[in-house]
Image 1 (cartoon, chains in turn brown, blue):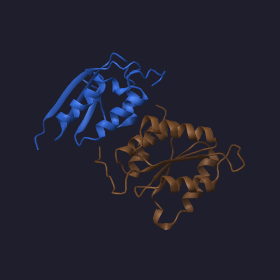
Image 2 (cartoon, helix red, strand yellow; image 1 turned 180 degrees about the vertical axis):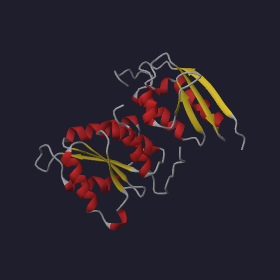
Image 3 (cartoon, helix red, strand yellow; image 1 turned 180 degrees about the horizontal axis):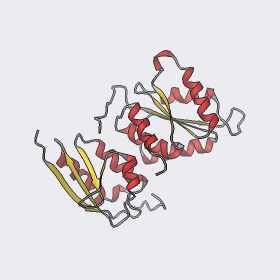
Image 4 (cartoon, one colour; image 1 turned 45 degrees about the vertical axis):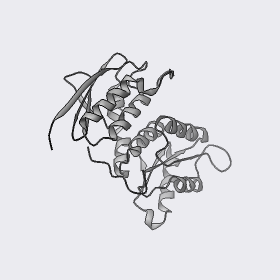
Length: 137
Length: 101
């Protein structure tokens, strides 16, 4: 049990990236209702044409909205959400490198758990580890 | 620093037990204290880290369970009192009776 590090600039931010705008929005609503307002939170879903998919531009914007000096943890659903998120991370300015991670966790449960951990001021690494600890028993 | 341990137990009356929302509240509250805090589903354990949302949620304590808290540290007394209070207040969710909480 490490004492949480709470940087002056706040808690780790959470970004939710789904193929479906509804899933992304619903997941974010669960985080807000279950965990609260203490964590920066942003979500995106759907392709620019309104269909299912993910877009690098939307992910970049979501990272900006949820940005925290403590870093950002991204929760994704399927394939493209992960690869586009990784692309968005690579496109970040140098000063953000190493402070954005994609969590290997289920999107809904992982988002709630990551946000719970982040709300207590945990480090980005601790947030990711807690989300990834949630795996089928 | 005195290495004393504070313990207390409380009956879990929340309708859906220690499911998602109550678990989040309990964990968040536990994290506000410096002390090491553990939660046991029995007086003899097994004991889990009350600050781990994954472990608290995985415990799946049902309604009617007696929850045991034990804390060690400078604010152990306050931590245990606060956690017992939260459980006694049904996690401040009066009227929230949604299926899987």
